[in-house]
Image (cartoon, rainbow, N blue to C red; front, side, top):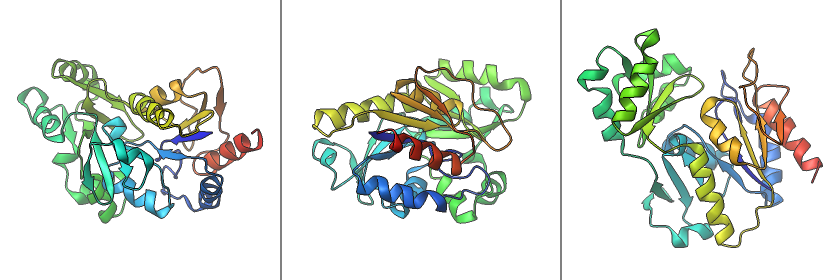
Length: 265
């Protein structure tokens, strides 16, 4: 079994970002050599911090599939042409952040959206509930731009304009995200899985866990898809031949779902 998991509102709490209760289970997965791959809208700086906190050893995906980070000691590193960044080889899949920012500040987007690049660290902290240190890490974008709509009915216009510019829009837990067209978590999932198998690394069943629309391309490609509900909300509408709907929000729902899957092995 190999586990691909979203982070916010899937692995960690939606409002409090809590994840202490999943630590023992993650440790057990590592000991049993079950790969755990983080696949998130978070930045490299944010994700590498959690990766190290949980003592994970597998590659991870950042910014909704915008890039893949491979630990330098991982078997996958030998065939990587990524640039070194804090002990990882960072491989871009999406367009550079500077390209996305040019679109955000263009005349056609004036009055339509506010991106993370337009916000101060304090404003991002207020909107997300993160500490200012964590909010600063969330602003260190490489391949995508979270944004808020200035006009409620502007999403269709923004999506159309983004498409003309070679970009795409997806919905996350708190924000919409601008990124390169054709870039999503499902594409990154498939690329990583193919590389695991090419290297002869046993994967077995693929499991994907997520909570929001931006997770669905990844869940659709997994053998087993697990939907985690957000607090006070129904599950994201989704159909899959092997779909599990967790009873509780993160992190409890993640732990219960993975424990159930382990018991079925």
